[in-house]
Image (cartoon, rainbow, N blue to C red; front, side, top):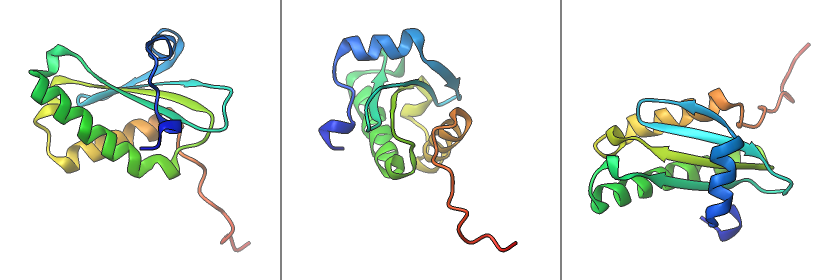
Length: 120
């Protein structure tokens, strides 16, 4: 994921977690907050409840890849933090992908589909 699409500073993570709108799923929690930028920035977190460092890093890598594939569909101008839950470490790829898709849909972050093909 390109650097411009990443949340890297601790203060940004804290701001999103403190004032953002959250949506929960058994595998992950998504918190979103509008930013004043032309890009959407994503951050991924996994606490020690997910497991050892190996399990936390695996969960974060998998979430990062799924979010990277969804990036073109996500509307611009958002800061998004995804927090892995303990079940995410052992979840199947399809389950994790479905969870992230649901969270993005519930949060309203997906761009509107083009309605150019409408026939009146």
